[in-house]
Length: 177
Length: 308
Image (cartoon, rainbow over all chains, first blue to last red):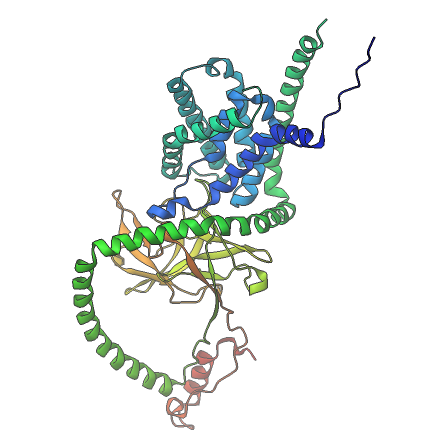
């Protein structure tokens, strides 16, 4: 009987495998950086959408094994460090949001796009209220929510564009899609 | 038995454990963040310094796109703009005459009173390379760091007026707390009534006026400038105009527009702590024998504290 040699992957395939594992996390980091690029100034506005929330929602539903809680926490913490705001605010808010999304994943994983989008609307509202509550408790005052509302409305409005981009990355780059 | 079927519940279990652990860690961080500020400040500075060059590169196409849009707008309204500038120029010429007369008069008064003039303020120019990135903070990163002479507390202005002040610096980049941020407090003076107040950001577009002693003396349209109290920010920097909101409160529309922030100046202002004693000019001293008491009080008024 012929004995087969044990399979050992080539360095290139190893690198490819590592890339596919870390790709959603890297996209999370890219989303953190994008959040600080002043896109709004093109039209004379200071509003930017919550890119990180879009990434967390999308990958928590589509590929939760590739976007584990530690990645969500790390992305949130880097966002906190870069924003200059309350340390741990977005790390906490995003991990809670991730837990909520994961718990409702089966409802949304194969749903039509409109349901997927509506789910994001609910999640954005939940995230906004949670963040607002934490900040208000932290500062001991009711923080005016107008900026937050505009921020979340913009995020929900541009979400379909990012679903398209993430979808392309998922089908072209990640295996088993 | 299939190993995948046994691995699946275990994977789910470990995923849940990891989620609970991260939730606890994030909550602990939220509480600790307030107490242990030094460690987080250092971490924040490292992350900021790493991200600043990337953000600078990413913000260039944004600035170029904005310039194209602005240029297109300018071409579209070039005729109207020309007419407006002609009218404004005619008005400014009249103002120029008045300003020259006043300048000469002020110079005479200063010479007469031997006034100690403010030293000129050096500045470093840079670009705002990032946006706030969240709905609860109004800070931007500028590409002027410790190596270029930036340090915490320095005022940052653009062509329109005061933008904010530096709250942390790294070797290459600094963080600027904008006037609209929840933590921003700037001492200001409202002209022409010359009432002092504190401009307090509250996360809205228009900062509030706090500790205003006489609200009735201030009306919408009044000009707000820095008072220089506290010695951190130089006095007289233009801040904005007083406006009245729908609920009747007085707020300030800042001259600098956060949505159009690009090139800024970091003012390297140092409060003149070391003031040399100056005697008043002879013209103010009066006759030496009869009014020696009033001369002594005049000297104290010119050099308060008598710092050497």
